Amino acid sequence: GIKAKHTTIAIPLYPDWSSEQGLTTLNDPNPTIASCGTSSYNVLAYQNSSNSNVYYRYQNNNGSWNSTPINLTGMVPGQSQSQNPTICGMPSDGSVHVACTRYTFVNGYPANPMTFYTKNSIANGQWPSQYWMLGTDQIIPTLTALASNKIDILYYSSNSIYKTRFNGSSWNAPTLVAFNSGYPSTSIGYSTAKYVYSGLLGGSP
Image 1 (cartoon, rainbow, N blue to C red):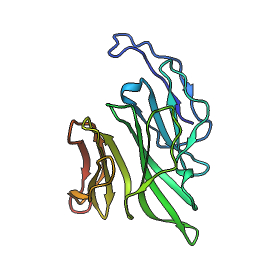
Image 2: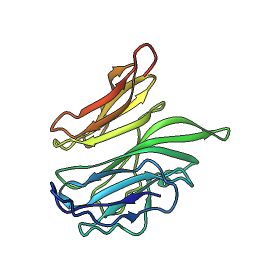
Image 3: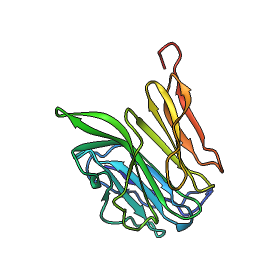
Image 4: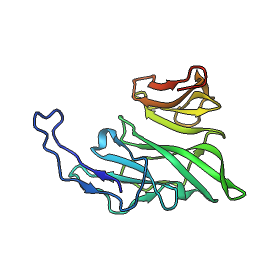
């Protein structure tokens, strides 16, 4: 299962780490963790191995984790499975943002990958029944909040990396970041996200 440790010392000479905590009892993969801006919470998302949904937990500033994981992608109607979650917190207001790859089922097999996105206004609040799908044939999303109160998502589609931005009310049209590339990763910036990705040359990594 997924385990966690934390320290209250920012740059320790001798780290004062807490004891290891077990957060799940199953072989859950793909944990992703982030700080939640002004709210003093850490936030975690991961893929559940038994039902292939993305779950969410938050950590209070005293180190304890909320006792009941929240099934985020289970709020969406229809048979599906979700993979590769990514999470971030907005630095200005403490809101939480999650994206992942969500598959529907065609003839019993996962198909039509698309980027699922949802948000919560505060780390320990109730997740609303709202979500956005950013089109089809999109996998391995990675997202970050910007200091300018916007969200950038990078994802892989058709052997290329694309980026789209949520400006608070709608998503911008996707723009090509890099052709013949994969596995994007992004980090916070003021008005523009910083990102890296793997480049492919001649069809090989």
